[in-house]
Image (cartoon, rainbow over all chains, first blue to last red; front, side, top):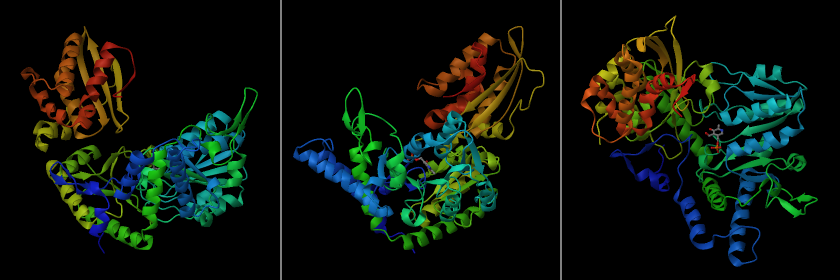
Length: 404
Length: 147
Ligand SMILES: Cc1ncc(COP(=O)(O)O)c(C=O)c1O
């Protein structure tokens, strides 16, 4: 199977050259590219109906408000939430997690425990660390195996009646591991804990159904699912969101204000203080339309095939090691050479037009776990091809040559 | 456009493979940590000072070829220099890495670092050790960051 040339045509940037070589974009875990439909939706809004939402009685405001709210409806349908009240627009996955940490986190008391896996992105560690310090909670780490999988037996043992919240990533941005979240959510619920899933790395690779997962919160990142940067969403079960205090205060999130008292707006506006990122929301809605037209059964097979091809080719390069060996993997392979630093790899392959990421991938605890300071990471999307992988492999051979 | 060999010159590859003055020093007057939070590169410098002169210097650390080679070349260059002299020298190196002025001939082997100019994302790798040394000679801060 091959990514059809039509898929690639949807993404105009893939046509360009870098350093006089055709771009090979393998940094999708950092940010995916945008299809033309998203670019056009944003540009159409900017050119034809920009205006502030929710407040105006004029035509433009009606148009922008409709587009804005229809994006919310699209997300709600796409992830199978029960109501639009459960979809809050945010700046990205980071802000989505921060809302839960700083608002829902206020209900935790000294001695309560929050569990976070060892493979989390900093954005799903630091907010919890902060609330733990503030409220004297315990931050418990769920350990992983050398293969890069959560050790489920340990997880089950660590769960107890003090566990108030479990924060886990759906897919690891450093290792590509797909975590068995459905099972973990079920186990956590049995102990009465609430579960937040960091879905930043999952949305572009698989269909999400929050009702089936039964997660309490699910954090989404627009720019990792073909939408613009600076926009994301938080799904939360209505009954939980309802009981949570606002996260920021100001316009939009109020019903009435006088100097004695302010009455907060209803869901989801309670959590959307200030004029929102309207163009971002419209772009996100267009990205959901794009996702809706994809066949994820095919894409999963196609991407897995590509990943297997990539890992097979990587392992043929002597001195190269792949970090982690999860049974269920999506999107990402991290690797390193014995004696060549990741940054040198990154610079040299860039010369060949290949974009990969090097460094700690905002997941230092996992780097510590593998006792490395930096890795190189290739991450794919459905528009990548075997040819992309071949170009990367050739570039990596060049790296070896230079450092031989 | 420059060729990769302008960045990865033989001198740099050599100093990366066999860094000079590499190792911990037991009785150093100054121990300085340099850290590049962006990429995790970390070096520790050990310096002994005698009569305003850098009488001994060594380093340990992990990092890319550019940062290791630059550290190694630096230790080689500043060993035996007066403090004032080494601060002046830092300024020259800093200028070489970050400006578009013609490259000074009197930098000797260190000219090999000039290729970094064409790679803005790598300038910090080349300047990490220099910043660390310079700041410790000019102030009292402990952990030196490139940020
Ligand atoms: C697993 C994971 N979580 C969270 C984030 C942060 O997402 P955002 O950029 O939308 O804040 C990232 C982005 O790198 C990620 O990979």
